[in-house]
Every structure is written in C-alpha cells, then in structure tokens.
Image 1: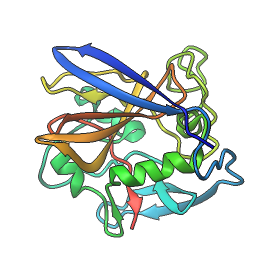
Image 2: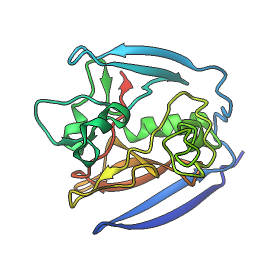
Image 3: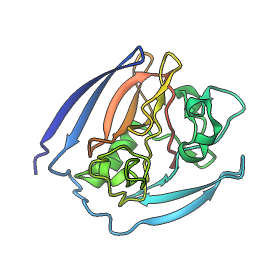
Image 4: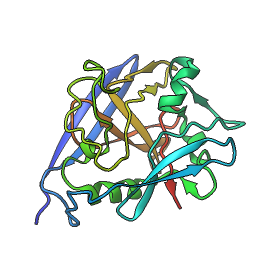
Length: 221
C-alpha cells in the first residue's frame, strides 16, 4: 500500500523565537501497519544514580521509559519548568541537547531520529493519539488542553505536554505541546526534535537549536 503523507508546516512565533515545524502525518498506515497495540507490557526501572523509579513500556521491539527523565546531572544545562521544582515530579526536567545526550542512565540512551521513526512506523495511524496521555485540563481529567485530539494512550507511553524553554530563556507551551529530543543532528547547530500537540493526532518533527530546553525520553539499549 502506498503511503499517502500530508505535510504541514506550522510557523510558531513564540516569545521572540521562530520555530518552523515540518510535520509529517501518515494517514494510510505504513509497511508494518500495526494499528492495534495488543497489550501494554509495563515494567519498572530504578535509576541507581538517584534512586528514582520509572515506569517503562514495551512498544514493538523497543522499551521506552513511560515518564520524562527527571535526573539532575552534576553538570550541564537543565531546568524545571518556570524554575519551579514542583513541576519536575510530573514533567521531568527540560535539558539542552548536549546535556540530554549523556543524561540517560546506564543501559539506556537518548533515541536517535531513526529510532523515533521506528516507533512511529510501528504504530501506524493516530500515532500521536496513541502516545498522548488522556484527559484534559478543562474537564479536570488530565494535563492536556482541550480537545487533546485522538488521545488514547493505548501504548502506555503517557506523553505529557511539558512545554519548553526557548532560546531566549523563557518557558512556554505547557499544556499544549510536548517536546522530546532525538540524538540526531540535522545540520550545523540543529537537531531533530519530536512533538505532540493538543489539537493533532500525529507526531511532529522539527529541526531546532541545541540550546533549546526540551524533555527527554530514554530508550533501552
């Protein structure tokens, strides 16, 4: 079956930072066409560095942390949203790219762009919805703004809208967007980033500067 892809370019002028999102949505499935997650295999992992436990989920041939990384390294650049440590418990830290590269615990790593693509291809249609936590802020059932389009969380990935820290050092977009680093550079001083959106049911892909503050999901080696 041929893949029919819809490309959306969303320009976001946000607090003095211009981000161009090049977003691809596969409406007809993919070579694997695994549109149904038969069961959620939930495990747990303890980070020996600080004793924190993380839920993990097996999706296809990959095991992902089902929570954003909340490890505070001894060096590098990372932030709690709005510099409020209370946000770390839910959303984890926002890391710049260089810090994110080495932030995952032993046995885990920052996923490459190809590994994100493997996840997306495995899930097929409504990929973003399958990865997003359910519920909305307005209904007091979740952390996403309404309408949280397509959200089922049937993978157990539980993607939260943790927002970002922009290149000017300002925080924003919590509740409406979730951003996650890849380990793959796209061009000079830029890196591929993945996004989930409150109003869409697919996974976005952008190229951004390495100084941006974004969430981290670790993938088992």
